[in-house]
Length: 206
Picture: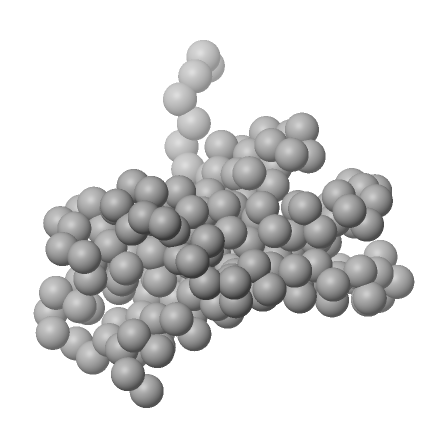
């Protein structure tokens, strides 16, 4: 598989996962069918759109290539079709889906920024923005504080995954290995932190 094809597959998989996760959040919020599909689309494509605008990839890939929108809508359709199963789904499954989308987007966003010559630090930040952007838009639509602000090890997990990926690419590691390592780091950190209740130190009044 060529590097370009690998990146596309990872990006599209992240879009599908976030589309599904956004739709599940919409169903839990008791939105109608249209609302579910809108939230699936916004969650799936939001982070990538913001990243592409910031790195100057205009028009964004999500606009140029209809397969991204299709993947987001497929995620929404799957959630609607399986809504009875979704209603009984453990929280751990939803967390896993969110972690998978976060990991895939953090990695693909970092690699895309790296490929256009963005400095390593900024490439890491672009990966983080890609990972948390869709979830932030989802939460704003649902009128709740975005997870990136209330779940401590969320943006940090995306940051870790993007960092591992960029370090691997900078060390001349194979692209597939670097991306797999970054995705694994992000996914495991997010899932384990959610299970263990890990939090960052809070700054405030004693």
